[in-house]
Image 1: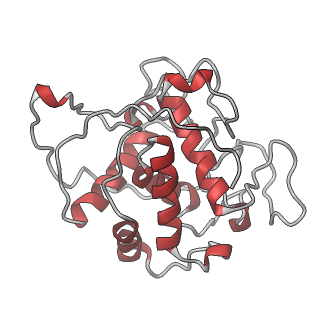
Image 2: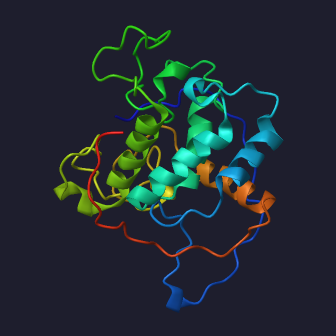
Length: 239
């Protein structure tokens, strides 16, 4: 499951705003929970994209290359699982080279926004018209691609997923529930001693920095959010 980042990225520098102090009664954490409510709306996520990569042509074939339409899918799927869909959207910008898929082994029509199954050594896929060898990197639709990403994020963060059936994907059993915070993702960052999601050190921290930029630019600087457990909702595996 884990693999090196598919493309190089430019450093964003330090966080753009100080975090306000929070009382202990809020059960807040200085780390960034994977689970919880979204803060940024689809329109705010799309505006952040436009400010920094508006010259790109986003490659989202069946959504008419609409960034805001894709962001809506992330927010909806995040709410379904109790995962912060706005942060997952930011992760997808890192993974896809801002939806350009340049230097990626995954094509735009895979609708795979998180490099899932794109581990080192796999041959690049020109497109998904003829499918892919197992495990397939082709997700079929944007909704299924986002849902797979969101479910995988939850499985790393939420130990209750271990007992669930009918999931599209799950973290390896020895890592399920071991990374409730984004800062645990990448290289040797997890206190559990396991590699979470990507081989690059500080992978999750980089995503948090990107997210912080989007939050601050949207005028929504806020204290740390409390960790929120996911709802025990019915499982869905179809569109």
